[in-house]
Amino acid sequence: METVVSQKFVFPARLRLLSLIMMGVGLIALIASFLLYRDDSQRVWSNLLVASFFFTGVSLAGTFFLAVNIVGEAGWYTVLRRIPEALGKFMPFGLVALAVVVITGILGIHKTWIWMDKEVVATDEVVRHKSAYLNVPFFLVRFAAYAAIWYGFTVIFRRQSLMDEQLGTLDHYFKMRKYAATFLVLFAITSSTSAWDFLMSIDVHWFSTLFGWYTFAGYWVSGVAVMLLIVIYLKKLGYMPQVNLSHIHDLAKYLFAFSIFWTYLYFSQFMLYFYANIPEEVVYFIERYDTQYRPLILVMVALNFVLPLLVLMTRDAKRNYLYTVTIATLVVLGHYLDLYQIVMPGTVGTNFGLGLPEVGCFLLFTGLFIFAVFRGLEQANLVPSKATFLDESLHHNY
Image 1: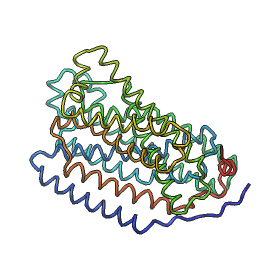
Image 2: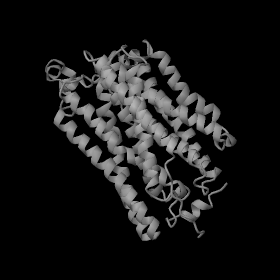
Image 3: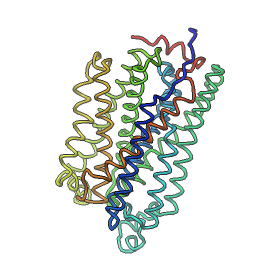
Image 4: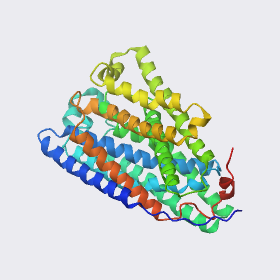
């Protein structure tokens, strides 16, 4: 096995300052939003739900990426393993933000989930029939389970990864694989139920059997895009010389393939309801396609499907930093818009826009995400020097 010189990352001062400025400006804008909309703060709370769920999903995508590659006994990703691990450093912040939105919703401060209102349950037959699942105590139990499973396994993978770097034995790797397999089983359940709880239950009269997968595909491909951006950024700073164009190519293939996968789920969900044309089912899409949301949705589809398909089709494009950085950035923005159009019609109707709530939440969470992730990168060697399959990863070239 080749000897790998341990390389420690130092958080660039300019990027640290930028993240702090984004958090500061975002927090000021968020406070100003609550003051500006103090008589009706629903738009602010809806944006908080969008931002907290999106960035928590991106963080969770890093944990899922690790688990899939560990179970699959993949070696190619080993030199960039620290990046998905670092994404998990944001997760506690995202879960706390989600908890704030949930608790304030339960207290009646906002009406994001109308099924939390006892008067609605008493007068709405559909909501009453769903109350065995959609009730506050059970919802809190599920939320606690999500937090424990997602963050618990994120911490376990990080700890096991650091031990793997010290030991580099197959016995230890087999132990990691058992943890990863357990996580994937639990994630298969919680990824869908969490989408039902936080997002689909906003439009409580509507449901889709594809919704969990569709939501997962959105934050999974966003997570891949963020990992790609971080890898290229670190390469530009002179870090991670072991990462070559083949590693970049593989991440770009993930980005390309799962953009198509997301589109397949998005279209399948729409097509089935459009074809059936059942009033209680198509109303979900009428609220989006026959209102002021239509331009936003067209832009979102272009960013999430059309541009990745056209630009990343070829092998050379996947190895071109300009193309991959551009598309990865647009995909992240596109899926943030996707989550926005999932939440807003059912919470604020057509009372949406681009203002202080939107800008404030996005800046606050983006700055916090950058700060948490890059602080995480500082806490361990960028390339695990004795990890299992490291030699395979160093020679990953095609």
